[in-house]
Length: 549
Image (cartoon, rainbow, N blue to C red; front, top):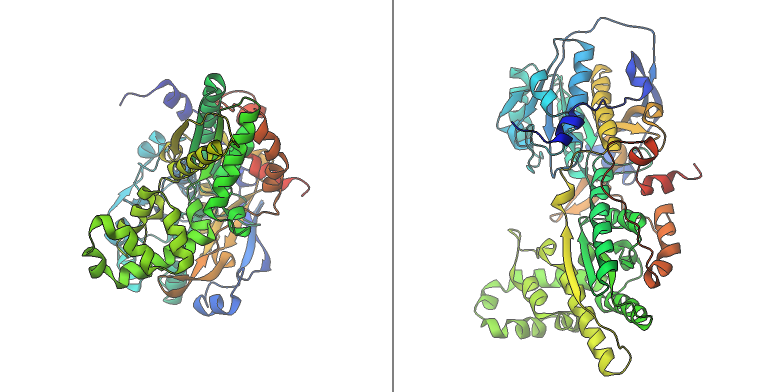
């Protein structure tokens, strides 16, 4: 297979392990833990794996003979840069324990585990995937591991292959499933350990003990590079407003990090919109006001960053969508019989006054999408809404209204972009290459220590990688109870952008200047090669979160 010059060079990169993991280690137990909320409910659901202590690995001179280990690994959910290095680190880690250890990859995610589809990962295969992006070594999938039949079916292949430990690489839902699986196997004395690894480019799987999920660093650097390119073009042509939607449905970490890196004229943070109970009209007014004020100084161009999940954070839109879901579910046949030209009015007539007013204010295309395109559960597919086009259309109408009233005399020409898949499978940055390799190698250490129900944890991430702290965190520690599909279920609590956190406060202190002036920063491509101050830097989010600690 032909390889590019970059592929060849990245294959030769040697990830840097924390110094503590370069020799024999011992697990040192910290204090017993409890869940972030709903302690009694979580404890009752996880009687065998709740309240475990935090672990930290320390060097030891004691060595003991080890037996070969058979380990399984699953890639779960959406791709994130560095997943291959987690597997490579895990492979090297179990081979260090004993050269006859074997690693089995279950194909296309948790579904491959349940359906007994797997591949033994040999050194020849592993070496082809070191420091590469994507999840194509074994593929990924979104099958949820939730019920006893799946657990029992998976246990059959684990026993057949003599697999004693399973590593699940995924986001908050996947690691919730890992915790449930660990609890079940412990309760029946199956003799199988389950370890999780924190993955998601969205950055919403983090807390005091998991400093960042892998892939966030690389993805935000890829997006920031392209945003920088557009900013340079924008500042050259001086005639367009670029509305850029960024991945991140459940939290705005990506948009915030890219704003800190690039300094655009506008960046909407969904969590702030919700906290201030802003309406869609108020968001539109905020953007339009900046456009109008820039026009007064002759600047008819700019950059607007929008998080993918914005619509679901606008309280009035959230209420509208909830009532729409109920209305169209209960009156599906009646609605289907309404002529297409009359459907909008039918909905307005059958909504509460508040929600009818919101619905009537929406552009025709968005209103139609909200009423027609449903998922298999009958819910609006919010992620399909082209929020960047919705906002630019509404801003354009507001500016036209102001122009007619003599309040605005500029030009407004929008361009639209959505950056999503471009960032999910890039070759990992040096940070993610090191971090992911350490997470995988650390998972092997947790397995050797006999642990289950833990997430691989590597901390102190703003320091050089040799100074990182390795250990394990009980997954139940991150859980709370949330309503899912009408039932209360235990899930890992998502980490939203904290409006009192250092990254947001840094952004908020500078955004007014960025709005009126052209303060663009051009980060350029991910720097794989060069001095450490160029190519080994963590995200600004991590940097600001750690300041003062």
